[in-house]
Length: 125
Image 1 (tube, rainbow, N blue to C red):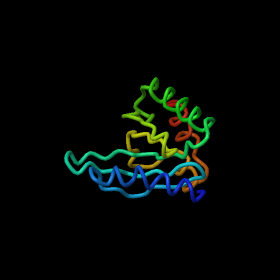
Image 2: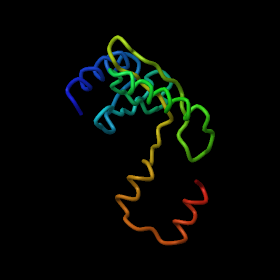
Image 3: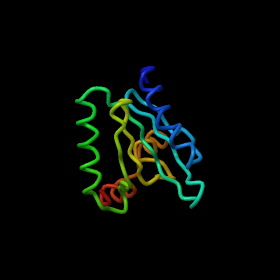
């Protein structure tokens, strides 16, 4: 992840730290993802902090949020809230935390799937 993204992520992480216990789940070119456990309720969410310094990135984030907001399915993580810190060039998306990981990681760990399991997964999609 570029250095600027780390600095921008640190802005939101500092604000989140007052309310949430944080653990980093992953990091990419434009974002970092944290699991955030609410210190009051005990609920856990995932928080994706993204670099939106350029308008194209902010537009992509808004599109992602719009699409997530329309999806309602038990096998798709739910959007809780999102916001943009445009002065700092960062945005954040709070979403349901997929405790068992995502399908991509599952496939990387497991490799090929037996046909009955693959059918079940595709039926859910």
